[in-house]
Each structure stands twice: as structure tokens, then as C-alpha cells.
Image 1 (cartoon, rainbow, N blue to C red):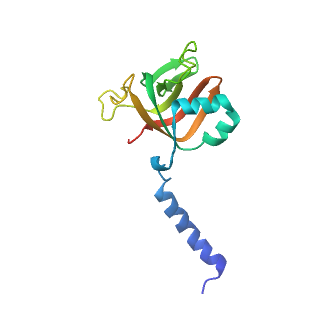
Image 2: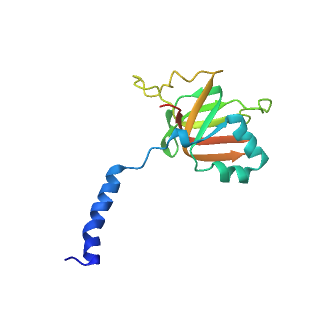
Image 3: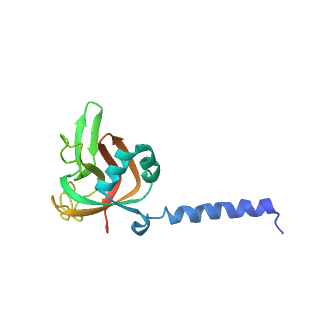
Length: 157
């Protein structure tokens, strides 16, 4: 009969191997916090600390009207080659502000599925139309009034 310590010596590697084979669970869009791009920006304008506690690192389902969309690209800087993720800018109630600070910008995986050119935006992304994106464990950058959310993809993909 094996002692308690001996059983753990045998069971622990088996348990760790089975957990690593499972991989990390895929976030469930149904459990994500649903919010419009406009509401998200208003939350940060109202109280950025409270908004960060409420949304940072959470799964978000953001909906808004597409104002601008850019495919990912690769370029060279003095520090070497860099890849910039695809970006979508949603309109907000602050469209009267100068420049692009008035928009909520999401970045992530928006490539066209099965496109011959890997640097092509998904054709479902259209300027002026409403779009929904899921941001898994959202990383948020806020600079009054610019709002940037990373780790996003089209909802339903």
C-alpha cells in the first residue's frame, strides 16, 4: 500500500499532463459584458478608475458604428521589424472633437478568413455599419478622451 506522499508523486504528473492537454478555455461571448462603444467611452469619461475596475481584463462584447478600419501591417523601425494589429474605430457621442480622439478604437484579429493576402480585412467590416466585436480579457489604454481596447475579434468568429 502506498503512503499519501507516494500517491501524490504518481498522481501529480498525471494531473498536470491532463491539465496541459486541455489547454486554456475559450472565452464565452455569451458571458461577456455587453456594451456599446459610446457607453464604454462615457464610463471612462465619467470615472476612469471605476471603469477600469469594471472592464479591464474582462471579456467585452462591444457594439458600434464603424468609423474607420485598417488592416494589420508590418513595417520596419529603427528597432527592427514590427507588426501593427488590425484596428477598427467606432463612432462615439464625441465625434465633434478634433482628430481621432473622439472614437473608441479596438485592435486585434480582423483578417479576412481564407484570404490569399493575409493582410486583408474581413469583408464583414464596413464603414458606416454596426459591428460587434468580442475582446477577450480586454487590455484597455485610456488617455482622455482616447479609448483603446486590445485582444479583440469579430463576434461570432
